Image 1 (tube, helix red, strand yellow):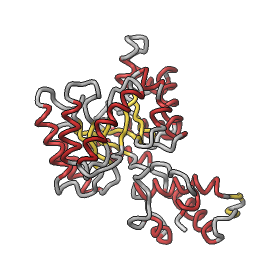
Image 2: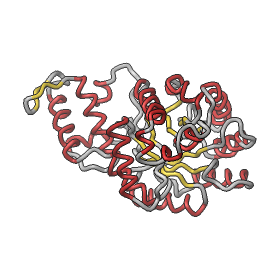
Image 3: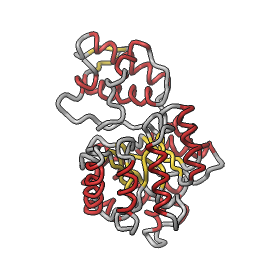
Image 4: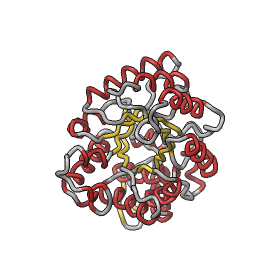
Length: 333
């Protein structure tokens, strides 16, 4: 039996997504990021931006460009999503009609920014589902950007929605929403990891996601000229705050994020050894290197192995059958 069938019997499997979400808001950057994804493979997602990362004043044409690129032949891995305007924006419904209508089948997901709470998310889902159903796509995955007080208060309720697969933290808008009570230094490192209110927000988002089997996605590193800074932020986000995905805003940030959030070769090898031994005894308890393991630890090591495979870490050939086409729920809910 497949590990997922054994370890999550009768339950919704936790969502697993590529560890890096790269944002691009201009045609030049969109095409550049698509070319890089073709080169590296689906080790990172791309989100085409219609909101803060895009120019203002030509919204309909921009949405049409986004839809045409996502539905076009260069989207070879089908791992490109779109960030729409927020549900209260004058162009939200237009974004949904154009992008979700024309590229419903090829969209990996849509990102919803700036909800004030769960009511905004439900309102957005109603519009999205109405359009995508007409285009032949049901239950398009949705990701939600948590950057307001109301959305943070509702984080667990939002994460519990079946169609939501990930929550992202918007640190800059969140800090700004405190009107100077949180210093600007908390928008970047080390302040973003040290200020109590920002730490609280990050931890609540991560906890809400893990409670409902969803993916917590960490905010950007604004220092685009320092790969070491983004790598350190990714490492801290993963190891100290439980984030398994992070935003990129420059192509040079993609590789450091992927590397920092990937399991090590040693971790992946240990996970493979334990799971293969477990499979050989029909997933009963085993002893490995003097330690007892059962299905509780198997679920942990299966998550490690999934992330290792998704990020290109070399795995023993015996495990590759678990990731054959149609067998791995790597980007499903």
